[in-house]
Image (cartoon, rainbow, N blue to C red; front, side):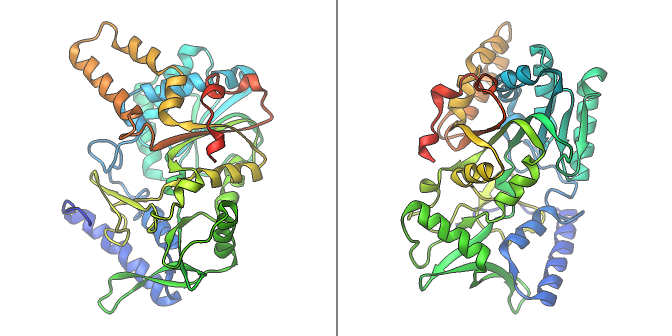
Length: 396
């Protein structure tokens, strides 16, 4: 059941109508569109997609709240986890954040790096959205010292030159265009989007090609089961290629991914037979990806087993996996909370307590979000200190 959604403004509707017309024209010219292509257009179409247009996306005024938007505690814990890696690589260490959001994480992280005495040589933000690059730049220029801001630069594509250090991605994998598949008569079909007689978008299924079919059959073999007829879910057959693109030039260091998702056996549970697709519009969550093109976020939960496999194919070993709550607590959350709470008023202490709850409670981000560390050419001493005790890689 779709909740009642706020009515978009006239300017929003005009942008959405323009994107709808472009998608309809592509379908008219080329036939039904794979859902992954539809999702890509809705999120990233130049000037019209959700992440490409100028609407506020993050925080109370946007559509959803990410961990860095809650306050600085999340970034401080992440930096604590990364200090061993930065000490191992010294002055050569660099940091690359995939998708900088509002710039809140970069702001808090740079201050934490400076306090810990492990400033990265470069703090790079890989951000394809020109609008978000501008917003991030304005925020960081105003909030950081000139010395810290000078270390930050922006990329539109992954680094091409070999580098060492840390790649960090918070809520990035969930926004990769997902392929939707279903099973009919024991065969794999891919979900497409077409238009009905009224011009509205509707779903239809077509026989899957070798890439999609092979990816689905791999999951079945890995789980030792077959999907029942009618089962529908998401898969990322392009994930190994994407991982190679973003990690290929990281010759030594670690990659830390934080996102909402499950190990494969939980992701593809029999009762989760319509997938994990979630849309967000002004803090309302629902599952209809065909409405409000360009105005709502469209995401799918992450199969963390697939993420580990793709990292392995890119030359990285799985160094650790745990729920976000465990990861943050193991890397200084109690300490940072106590320090921030000292000598503050009741209102500030309450806000900090609420931040901790959102980050750690099972019903909030604590269990829904997972953290995964992948490593290449890094000694055990360069891995996050608290990782060994909390590692749940056996769940993958």
